[in-house]
Image: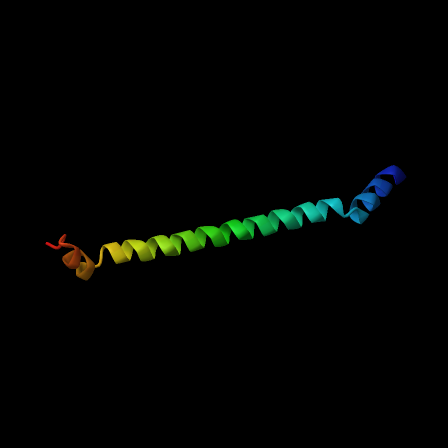
Length: 62
């Protein structure tokens, strides 16, 4: 039983696990920011190409 407590204490004092978790959280946040930026840029470009004024100026107006 003491062996289990020693293993648990050693696990709590090691810093490798929390470091990996911190890197995983940072990576997830970076990916989230990238997806949000790509979606915002895509929406703006889509709105710009669907603008009736631009379509008329390019000769594609209906």
